[in-house]
Length: 281
Image (tube, rainbow, N blue to C red):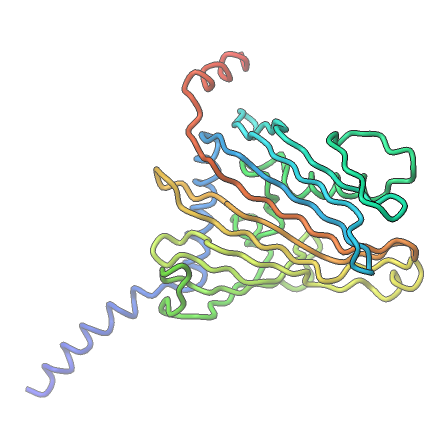
């Protein structure tokens, strides 16, 4: 009769072990959910605020730009309409305000060109429905194929905002030459296998030859994105930001930061969808 307790014990343990997914199973579900979420995001209009800052190495603000957009879906992606803009630039030791992002500056304006290129690259990726480039956070199936994932916390022992999460670390596979540039950590909602927070840092260092010959270096580069769940099961990135230090051709050095906040999500009107369909004929 002693075998009966053992049998009951096995029946209790084996299902629990079977229910705990592997990191490959978790990330496969994440990839499926990412594809589904991208499709759902095209149905929503939302507000977006972007703040970009450049500081000199002495800590003084060199330039700051605050932009607010109304983001609406289109058949190919999203359309961003600038609703409000505020800018500040340091000129001759004083901060000068301006309200036109395209205002011509007569003096050499490396900061202005670099800031707008950086903000555009970080927040306006044309291949996504949220503007965030897939290559920054390896969550889609195509990006995951370039990385190695490790389940750092098993059995959902970690929590984030009061909910169980899996803590998954990642780094590029060896000998990747196609943009696998990041290492970091992702917190995955244990119940729905949706990312709730992902942080990345550059997985490589600038070669010494480049530093010496060109006087160029990038360090401290990292990005973080957080997601929230909305109506109809929609998961959307609500905050996103990155910061790093760059030194270029010996004379130029800046500490750069960009942050983005999405809010005010509402479903696009049916009439707007019809209009898009008619325009595509």
